[in-house]
Length: 111
Image (tube, rainbow, N blue to C red):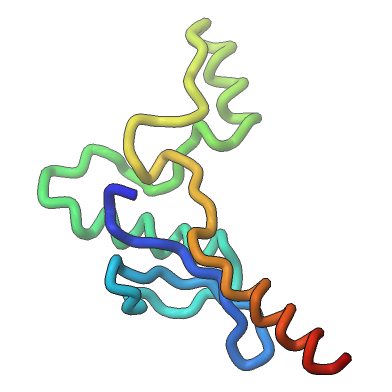
């Protein structure tokens, strides 16, 4: 990933959490309860660290909403790509899933 941030899914105090780490493995974001909240933090972080003049008015990409994209395509007769040019427009996945490992360890320990 170009940002050198990686999404982690983990188990913390008996709940699922998501957070971002840098390439050294140091946590750089607060714990978030959902992947969507982790994505929102990441987008805000990326937008705030951008040095140039920001032309976008919002971090929400209208192309991700199927209904909005359909309406825009009908109005303009130009098909829009559901994925934009910026890295924040592209879908991402969990890089390190520590949750599954911890659950498996727990299940093994009770058997």
